[in-house]
Length: 153
Length: 305
Image (cartoon, rainbow over the protein chains, first blue to last red):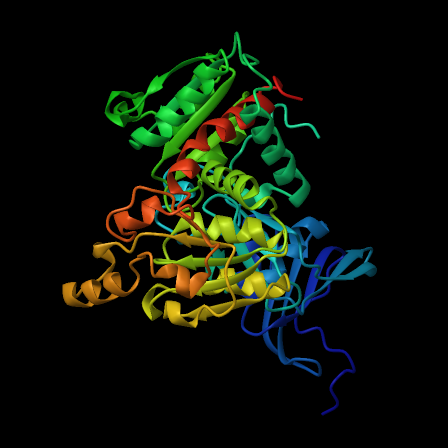
């Protein structure tokens, strides 16, 4: 049986954001960190074959154009991801993930003596270092964490 | 350089030129300049954690510049005991004063306070994190006694793992091209993130366990206390504490001209015989807390510009 050249295992969307090249199996973390769980229809593909990554996940967010500020959070859990903005079934913008200088409100400081665990404070972490192996420093207690992905709420 | 309205939260917030600027203003105050410039200004000292020495130093600094002070020294009298958040306390108190000096046992408390306050907040210690006015007074002392902050060879001795004073001072001096000798037992070495920072900044440092290995003479030897509580085994503590005790023999190991500093209080890590040596700076260092805090209070309130 002949398979079609490009099978849409996750169906195409008319408008919204497609996040491709997510390392498997991080798709659910991606949805979580983007904060899109309750924002319209999501389709998720896990463990798709990929030339670049061997296995990859895909997340499609319908009717929502995610800004770079939001998608750059993925540097924590899916730095290889590519972002495609879709309008009228076509890709109108394609962009990689950039490393933001700071992460606001998406990480939790594990230091029990930090003010962010004592009072209702929006957490803020500053990035230190470049590349995939960056660390983050809590803007409040100033402790350094080398595995920022572990701090994702 | 404009410091008016700026909070003093962490030494990490400062560039080399800004540090030099603050140190210069403190030196001017020691020469009799800026007298009474804080007349009409009010400082609130909010000590959610007791620290008599630091609080008195802030209050003396304010009063000696013509300003006035109110506050509390004991958290049990503050509204925090009724369950009020720190943010709400600060939002209220900032309407009563021109500047706040605060100490809190929770790390990052001063940063949060500076974000919600309409007047500058000076961090007088937030747990194990920062105590920037201590670092500034250390730098004022070094500038005064050595005559420069640049290209110093600095030894740091004792509990380098937990000592926030040595962490902040090393960060600050690294901006001025210092090279370091860290002298500590294996279990109390400088945290790896600090040594990584120094390495990334291109600073050279040695980590040794024995003062005999100091090598070239030091300009400054900064001594900190090794606390008993850090050791599970009391005998181990006694062994370590004994081998890091400073006696007049230190001059043969660290150089005849080495200036000996200590943030105080000391217990027995510096022998009393050392006090009589011209090398002993620690009491003058403590006194420099006044002009240093005067300079910072003057700068952030806009009284010195």
